[in-house]
Structure formats: C-alpha cells, structure tokens
Image (cartoon, rainbow, N blue to C red):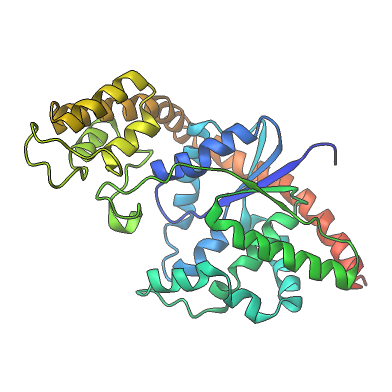
Length: 330
C-alpha cells in the first residue's frame, strides 16, 4: 500500500453530541487529509448492547452520517459505509473467534466496566463478550495500518494485535497488525458534571439549535459553593470553564473570565452567555451542512450505499486471502 489507511467507526445508538465532536469527529476530519480514511456506521456493534431496541438504528445511522458530513467528513475524500452492508465483517469475525481464547476477551478492562455501568441491560450474550473481536475484524478487513484511539481504548487494540499475531502464526502472514494512533482528546464532562451520556440527558447535541444550546448552557453545573457573584469561585474542574477552554477561541476573553471568576468579580450569567455564544459559533456551520445533507435524503443514502460498495471491494479481497490461508477454498 502506498497510502496509510485509517479505519474507525461509531455506533448509531442516538444523536451525536459535543463529546463525539471533540473526541472523534474533529480527529476524523483531520485524518482524511493525510490518510486513506474508512469511516463506518457500527450498527452490528450497536446490537451488542441494544439488541432489544432496533427500531431506530437505521434512522440513527443516517442522522449520524449527516452529522459526520456536517462536521467536515468529505465523502469524496473518505469512504463512508455501513458495517452490516459488508457481510465480510461477520465472516472474518467468525474466523477470529475460532482462534481466540475466551480468557483473552474476559480480561479486556472495559468488559467488566461496561457490565457494571449498564447493569440495567442484559449483557450476558456472546455478542457482547466478543465485541473486541468484531472490532478486530472491522480494522483488519481493510488492512488498516493505524487506528485512532484514546488512552482508554488502547487495551482493545492490544487485544486486536494479539489476535492478529496468533492468526498469522497459525496461517501465515495474512492480516495486517494495526498500530495505535494515540489521539489526545479533551474529556468533556456532562452538563451536570457527571460522565457525558445520552442516558443521563446531560449532553449538548450537534443537532441542537441555538436556543437549545443557550438553555442547556444556562443549566450547567458550576461551583456549588458560589451562591453569589461576589464570592470567589473555582475554575479548575468547573465544567463551564472546561467547555470555554475547548470551544472558545478567544483566549483573552477566557483568561479574563477566569481571573474575574476567581476574584468574585463576574457572575455565572455572563460566563455562561459567552460560552453559549462560543458553542453556537462552532456549531453554526455544522448545522448548515447537516441540514443540507438531510434535505437530500436520496443523496445521503447514495453516499452510504456507494461507500459500502467501495468498502466491500476491499473486504472481499481480504476474505479471499484469508480463506486461501485457512485452506477454505473449494
């Protein structure tokens, strides 16, 4: 390969929010300039924890892709596709299962963490236990050289690399061992200072209009000890200032607000009003591009279908190579 390929996906479990923007999509946009980028809707991955709630998956998928385009993912420069429209993902996933010991999957840190966090869901399925293997199939199917990950996702990729090494040891050098592309991302808290989550209702969505953003910012958690504007407040760890640092490009304004906040010389209303303005300035162009994409549903669907056709060409070639290595050619 003459161009380094990057592969990444996102589960269509609901509307995308600012956490998705700074945690993944900003990076995706940057990567498409220097890599052969494959970005996919991970609808089968959504089933690992939402198998009983499938009625909105397709609608969410198309809405998410509109968000991707709104954020700057260019279908002419990146391959946008749907996981389940490329059945080779499932076949390679099955073959990887044959060589992977169950304890390897059970030791993935997020397996236990998610089981505890999603205690209200039935996660006792083979699909949930094996989702890191499906992730491995997702990237190796396209000979991905690099996979963008945050530090919390490194154990997943290390498992993938271990599985690929085992597979290649058994059948010869068939699969490309992916390398991690560490992407430091700001960790945004939710509006209530808990972990940002759709289930908590503490997000600002990319699809929110300007008025909704203003309303949500007004409700943001700040320093609980600061009951009046003339009381010195805490900036460190304060969600309002975490968001200012990420979304307000006017560093002079941010520094001034912080200094006055710590001195008890500015009220929350001013701080939050300026934050809402900064977020809306960032989301304005995204809203416009998103609306334009949704206004042409036929074109949006064709982008996904054409991307899936293109992705499958590569996937079929990889599976043929894998079948030959495993001696499953008839």
